[in-house]
Every structure is written in C-alpha cells, then in structure tokens.
Length: 436
Image 1 (tube, one colour):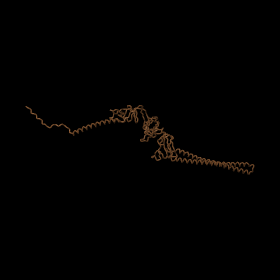
Image 2 (cartoon, rainbow, N blue to C red):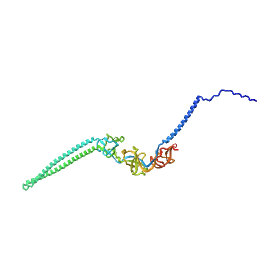
Image 3 (spheres, rainbow, N blue to C red):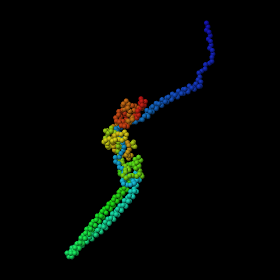
C-alpha cells in the first residue's frame, strides 16, 4: 500500500526580523541613563554621609592631658584695694576755690609733684589787704610808743621838780632855830604842800606808765593779730597749689555740688568747698586683693598661704601674692541672695604699674601642691555608669577610658589612668564617633 503523498505547505509571506522602532529605543535609553544617575547619586550621598560623620568625629574640641605640678586651690572673687591711701583736701576758710588745673586722672605721680591748682587771685587780694593792715597796726603801735615816751619824759621832769621843791622846803624848815617862829611855821606848811605835790606827781607818773603800757600792749596785740592773719593768708596762698603727699596714682572723687544723681569727678572749672575731699592717691606698693572666702574653704587655708591673683582686666597675667590676713568673723554680704563670708587679704608681692585699685578678679589660695600629676580640663570629665571617664582621641575615633580622680578644681581635674599628652574630648562623644 503506497503512502499518500504529503501535501506541500502553503507558501505564506516571508518572516520579518524584530526591530525596535526609534521611539521605543529612545525611551529605553533614557531609562538606562536615569538608573545610572540614580545609582551614582545614591553612592555619592553614602560617601558624603560617611565623610561627614568622620569629619564630625575629627572636629570635636580636644585638649591635651598635662603633666606637671597640680595646684589645689580655693577660689574666690575679690577687688584690689590699697592699704595706704591719702586724700587731698581743699584748703579751709578760703573763699572761691575754683580749680584751674588738674593732673591727669589715673596717671602716676611722685611725692611733691603738683596735683591741683586753684585760682589765687582772691587770696592775693586778701594778702595785700592783710599787708596793709599790718603796716597800719605797726605804725599805730610805733606812734603810741613814741607818745608814751614823751609823756613819760614830761612826768619824770615834773616829778623831779616836785622832789626839788620838797627838798627845798625841808631846808627852809631846818632854819626854824635861827629864824622867827612865824617863818618856821610857814616853812613847815610849804614842806607839806611840796610833799603833797610830790605824791600827786608820783601817782600821775604811775598812772601814765600803766596807761601807756596797756595801750602799747593792746596795739601790740593788734599788730600781732594782723601779722598772724598775714601769715595765714600767705599759707592759704601756698595752698593754692596742692602737691602729692605720697607717690601713687591720682583719682578724683565725685563732685556732689549738683546732687547725688548728677555727681561726676572734679574737673577744671569746678568750685570746691573748703575742707572738702577732692582727690585720693593710693600707694600702689601697698595693693592687696580683698576676697570673699566661703565658709567651707575657711578650714583649708591659713595666713601665709601662697595666692595667685588673676584680674579681669589683665587675663593674661598671673600675679603672685601672699595671704596676709583673714577676718576672724564672717561679714554680711548685701548682694542678692544675702550671705555671709570671711574676708581674706592677699598682699601683692610684685607690684605692677598696670594695677589699679578697684580692679575685680579672682584670688586662688593654694591649698595643696601635687607634683607630676596628670590633669585634664574639667569639661573633659564625664560619668558613665556612675564612674568618671574621659574620651581619648584614637586613630579611628574616640575611646572611652575610666580614670580615677585625685584632686579637683573648678576648671581642672587631676586624674590617674591617663598618659601624659593624650588628647581628650571636651564634649561627650556619641556612639557612632567612638573607636571600633
């Protein structure tokens, strides 16, 4: 049996190859480019994030651990004061004390240098008047002395004449034995009259002498009074220029003539009142820091302790001083809130020309010295699980390290368990910035 012949396939149209149209091709290319851009952007963001975290870890403020002598101090606030200070007082009983010249305020002066000059015209006029009064008083006294001499001379002449008349009358009385009785009685009467005249003349002489002495003494007192007033006026004239009583720095006090609210330091042209304080000169060699010591620190310090003074106006200077005295009792502090403090007085050992009374600062009284101690700033000490720790800078971050506190100050802490020179962070380090 023969197989039936296969039916030949029906010829169709030829197959066409797969080709993307241009529009679909462009979409696919844009999609691929977008994926590449997004991948690059994501990678850049990740790298930037890692670099930022690393930069933050590296940019933390740090400080080195210092090795050396550690000073345990009791710190307090205080103010510079001069133990020796002299005020300049305006002359007494001098009218119209107008200031015409002042030494520069705050400048150093030496003892004997002029500080204040007043207008001397009024005092010079008074001096001329006192000189004229003295000359007049002296002339009046000289005239009285001359008149007394003249009166005394006349009285002496008259007294001598009266004495002569008495002696002559006595001689006549002595002749009564050789003359008649009547003449003898007349001679006795003449003798009595002569003696009366002599006594009257003696009394007149004594009266004139006493009167002249009293007059001369009174005029001499007036002359002496005029001389004293002249000397006082000359002294006042010398007080028109006031010199520095000691070496130091001159400060001018407030002038309250315009009231307490408008009080300002004395200046040229101001009117000073007699006996009023105008300026003050503190002795810079006697400067000391007066500080307010807390009661809790009183038992740790004593007189003679070393002190380091630091002033707000001179932050770069550490001034050596010595605790000279401590008040035996506390004193009331009227600041708010009110409290009571001991007063400590630290004597400046090396005076500085930049120091001025009234400067504020701190006074560190040295309580203990610890040699070769490792110290870090107080900001670098933190607490972790109840124990003190520091964060030490490492190659790949910061390492938390436990330390032991040896001594503590307000701004510095002495510790154990840390090498010298290690850099410690001044802020608490986050978990991601620590060393792995």
